[in-house]
Image 1 (cartoon, protein in one colour):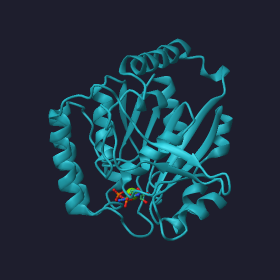
Image 2: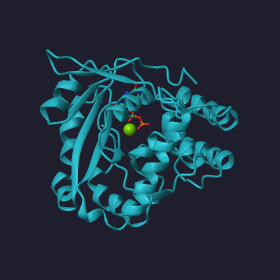
Image 3: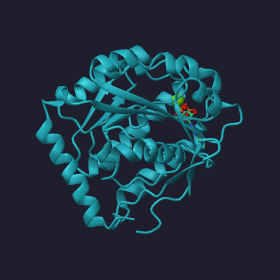
Image 4: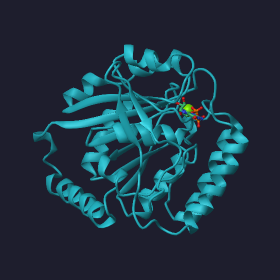
Length: 287
Ligand SMILES: Nc1nc2c(ncn2[C@@H]2O[C@H](COP(=O)(O)OP(=O)(O)O)[C@@H](O)[C@H]2O)c(=O)[nH]1
Ligand SMILES: [Mg+2]
């Protein structure tokens, strides 16, 4: 693991380069990793992949890779994703946060974009979101689903819970964000190396936003379209909601880490080419 000072210098160096080149990106090949966590989402993957506007992104100068994190699915999610042309990372430890820790370790793009594998998030909006990121010099862009036109897409109880969690988040972190639980973010990859995110489950979503704000990255929230989910919800509303509430207070009052540690190693099988994440479920044990 890199010592904290070196780690900090790498993040600061990346930010300096980013600022220097701002406005000149058009002259370079820009690389984007779209990271999608998937637990038993096989039937949703083809429609999801179809909404990724690879050609429009290429026209805008982005070379795109899609990384699907198969979170120990039992319905062939990994195979389906591979057939559809995604890079597949196998994460044996279940959990939304575990999936992202593995996916971010595998991502190679300068910019990372995320979203669920359940047809709810508008990947077709990515060209516009990336333009906002570039033109406004944003380092961490998050999205707001809790706008009137999306009212039908989310269960009423989930909307109420999302507003409650977002209100507490705003109070504790002064982050001004309306939707603390949105799973669509677009950010410069160096941000991931400059923040301390420990959640292995659903709280990962709020934690990454709050950690980016705490670390002083230039953050913006923009409204997006949110669509009805295909297939079965993986979220356990009540326990996940309670766990998220606990995480908010723990995060706000915990002692900052001496080092930013994200300990996922990826191994590739020579025989099958499968990339597997390990260890999993435990982050930051060496601080
Ligand atoms: N809840 C949950 N989702 C997971 C897990 N691993 C991967 N995922 C994926 O993470 C995304 C979020 O789950 P979802 O049920 O859509 O939660 P919601 O969007 O908050 O209602 C989906 O694409 C899931 O397939 C896991 O262990 N738990
Ligand atoms: Mg979802």
